[in-house]
Image (cartoon, rainbow, N blue to C red; front, side, top):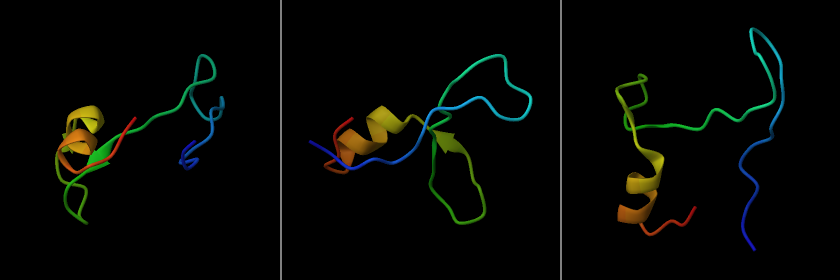
Length: 46
C-alpha cells in the first residue's frame, strides 16, 4: 500500500481536521515546493 507519513488532526489555531504537508529542499527551511511535482520527479507516488 504505502508508508504512513502523517496524521490528520485539529490542534493549535485550527478550524478543523487537516494535514499540512509540504517539502522543503534545504535543511534551513528554504522555499516550500509543490510536493506532488517534487515526489513525481524523484520517483515517489502520492
